[in-house]
Image 1 (tube, rainbow, N blue to C red):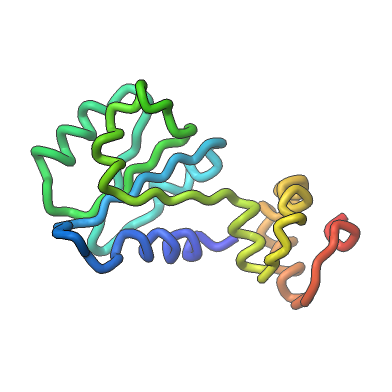
Image 2 (tube, rainbow, N blue to C red):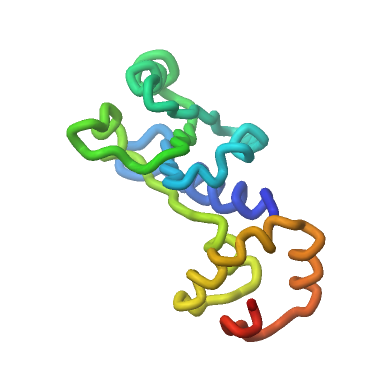
Length: 153
């Protein structure tokens, strides 16, 4: 799976045209399973900054967004699920921001042009296979036009 695909998808959110009086784009990404926590540090954007939530720094992130830097585009990444509204200290900012969501199985399916959502569980089952870059490249080189659970097994 290419990191460039993740970056491309995020850039679509971060660099959207500003409307309704917005001065910048803020994108929240709650990574429920923490699948991308190792890759997030490698993402560099030309016109956006990345802040990582750790479960204890919400007030500091809020301070940065509302007082310290009110003009830059931001990706706010959390390696955990979205908190309940009563526990979400950034909820007010989320109301005027965008939310990005993906998982590794979804990205792989997109790269392989698989649009049959019923195969998502099969792709999740074989994530270990797809994490091996050599095997993944070999599978992509077959240029399959249709996928089934049997073909994936």
